Image (cartoon, rainbow, N blue to C red; front, side, top):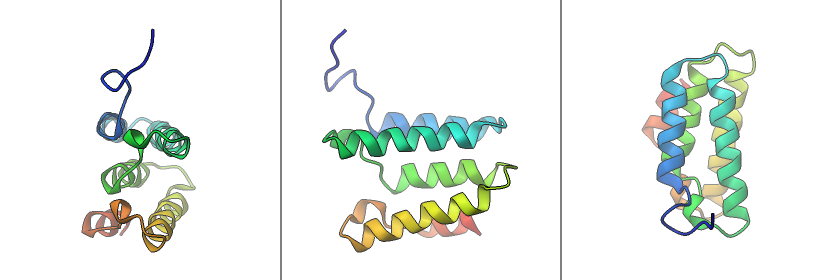
Amino acid sequence: MESNEFTRPNVNFYTAAIDCFAKTKRLDAAQKADAMLKRMEERAKNGDLSAKPNVRAYNAVINAWSWSNDKIAAKRCEEILSTMEARTAAGDKDVTPNTITYSTIM
């Protein structure tokens, strides 16, 4: 089946799915959320700006990691925050960390 703008997942779809992963509190939820974020970043890099992650998407992944018992959870949250800050500094205001970002990390 051919994909078009109505059937192709966009940032809102991905963010909702990531939120669902976070709320399941499954052991692999953070990893699945992170994989989805990477898929979004790859699609955006390849020109599909409808999948470009925004602050809500990044915050959803940080939230998933914040509920994780994985040993790398805190480190991964810091890495995501660093990515957001670097992209903001490069001019991408759609990923500017906000109070939700910082309070979730704390």
